[in-house]
Image 1 (spheres, rainbow, N blue to C red):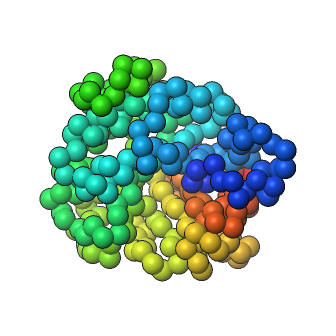
Image 2: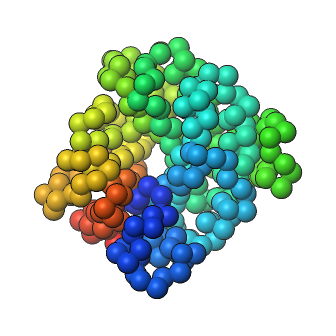
Length: 275
């Protein structure tokens, strides 16, 4: 049975208070409120800094049993190290509590910077380093360095589970035909990113799931999706699932607060939980 997840990219947006989040809702209840209406959320804080195991455990416990988080890989790996010499940074990332999500751990999202062009050997090497199971992730995490204090380390998965990865590219050189075979060889999903035409649109199947990020089809991060546009996305997701692929779709058009409402609209069209 295929799995369909629709949600938002992050959930802490002060501008949503009094809109999506009702007036008077305490801030600590916002994740619970969002998770009751959606089926997945991307954790964005992990992109900016290593999080704490206690935070991942808290997020796990505050959400419904069938909820799933995608986790955004650290920008230190993608934007600063630019995928080079990243074994220890990868170990630190996986040691910092990602595995505490347990069965709620969904795909890991790796977003490359817009000024980073395609390098076939570098991409192949990086994707080959990524752990494919929680057991492999724990073994990698055990090689973390002293940057993490003992209370900032979590190395014990609750079970041996698959770990999925998705890659979002932003430089036009990634339209090269060599990209798809590399992603396919490593079982990594290429993100279908809707970016108002600013970044590459890559609609290719490379593994057993599809991952889409909707940043706005008219204005990046700003515009909402019309009923007609949501109908098109619903049809697209239904084609993916008809082919036996799981689907993960996240709305990142957050500036004017459209993201959660668009996500609920898509969920309604797909007839799946949440919404």
